[in-house]
Image (cartoon, rainbow, N blue to C red; front, side):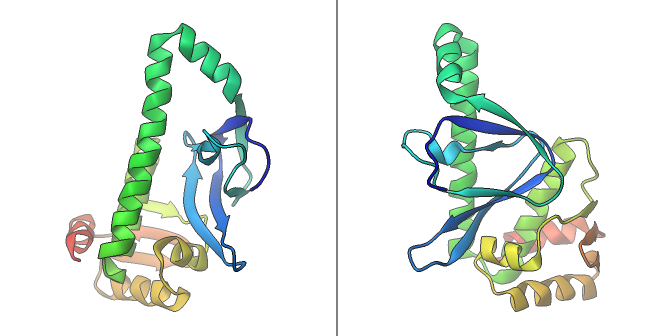
Length: 186
């Protein structure tokens, strides 16, 4: 955060959380990135990065100097479309998150978070129903606008209802259809 913008970063492997620091010193989790995601897009069009990215496990990134990407995009229309597509997907994902935070109960927020994470794992060739959370419950709460206690309570509630099996950070989705129904509840 605050460093001069010069590049975007592709996550080659690993898991990151992105945080923003509010004026009052409160740190807010604004995203989680994994293999194939891009970091640093918050700096496009401004002079400095607005967020800090922190690796949550051993990770590797690829530095993509933005000036060079722009040069290549100008020379190659297909690459320009891809670059614009990446930016559009990031805007769409952020818009979806704002909608989620503004209109859903705690249960629906956590169910949507897990369903989204599950879909992202599946896109990358991992199990959609059996995975390890790299982030803490506190990080999840910060991201979803929920208190730590609420996140823990909802995880326990989902386990009691037979939607999930939770063993610390290991999550197994037992009833994906019922979890999707919770996602639709507001």
